[in-house]
Length: 156
Image (cartoon, rainbow, N blue to C red):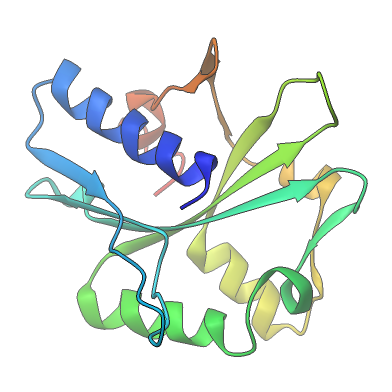
């Protein structure tokens, strides 16, 4: 599990606790001979928080998040199938690494937006495009889940 994935899980669980919302974010243990479906699962009786989140960390030096480089051969199709069958809303959380000593920033992309780009045979998202999506704020070194994104339906 990457630090970014751990931080997303911690941030969601802290958000649920602080706002007294029944919900839990977690990672499914990855086994040696089986593929992992998604990085983070969020379960809640509140439908806005029934989520599947794929996490990617990308260096801004790369210039983009590429489908062929950052996803496995059939990973997008497997995730999409799981989201459809489970009824979860899907998200892609992208952490942009700006180099040593510079703060990282994370952005959230709706899975449906990723899927549209993928099906249109796009190669991915440039760093500039990623930075146009809603940003996950930080407080110190921790990411903070902002309820306004969810309540205003800006994201989901």
